[in-house]
Image (cartoon, rainbow, N blue to C red; front, side, top):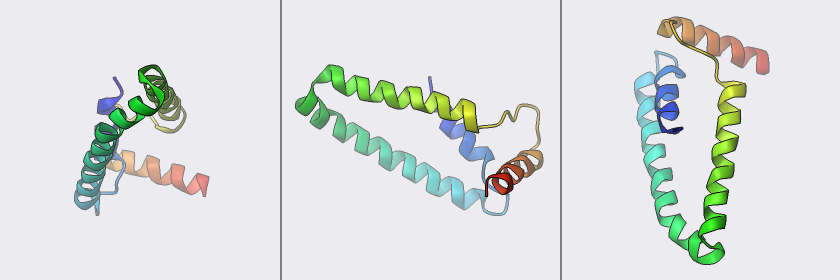
Length: 95
C-alpha cells in the first residue's frame, strides 16, 4: 500500500540540521490528518454514500501514485548526504 511511503520520505527529505524537529512536526501532522479522515468518513458516507466515499479515496490514491512517480527521486543506495544534495539540486532547478 501507499502508507509506508510517507514515513520513508519524511526520514530522507529534510536537511540534517533540522531533521529531528521537521520529522516531529511531520509525524504530528500525519496523526492530525489521520484523525480528520477517521472522523470525516462517517460524515461523507452519510452525505454521499459508501461507493462515492471510496471513489474519492481511490482518486486520492491514484493521484498519490502519480505524484510519487513524477516527483520523488529514487534514493536506493544513497547516503543521507547524497539524498540531501539530490533534493537541494531538485529544489534549485524548480525555483
